[in-house]
Length: 121
Length: 108
Image 1: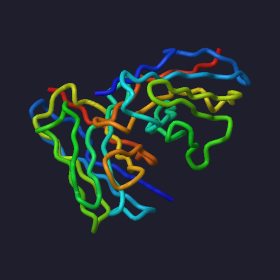
Image 2: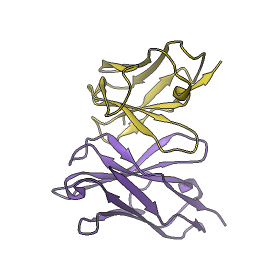
Image 3: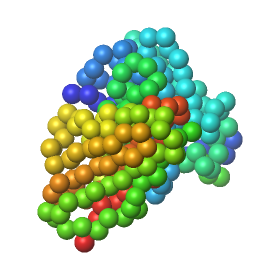
């Protein structure tokens, strides 16, 4: 059974930093792309970032490019999202999602339960 | 960036009725790289359909998807009580991956 467990969400001040983690189990983590998708309160879904497997390429939404960094540790089956220069508009539930294959052009076949990030003073 | 527009915003139906949800892409670059997700309050999204028409593992056959290019449809043949939720389409054939704004299927 595929499981994705996020952690690290918290209340942070504007301009601050936070690191999210996602521990995966139930599949061969190293062979799939992994992603972060967020959902602002009462709003729709927004893709944030993808880390492909194999070549290890990373991709970002324009809204977070230069502020967020996605990484993965295949030895720990863990995906990370380092967020810096946080803004109020980054407030959202952040979901970890498994890509349907190794590259960037994937859908999301499994999702974690999410972790809440609140950016406020 | 491909913009996905879902319609209607809200669909009010009774259990047993047929639901037809639309997703229109601003460009045809997504081909059949279109997925549908269901989200219930307080829960993570769940994959229903990928490749425009393939059901994900464990999804009942009352859910079906169709379309290609710019026009896609999710059909729920007979609504069950557990089907009342928000549905999102997502294209993954072009970067960045984008979602529609969602259609809420509510009990009439």
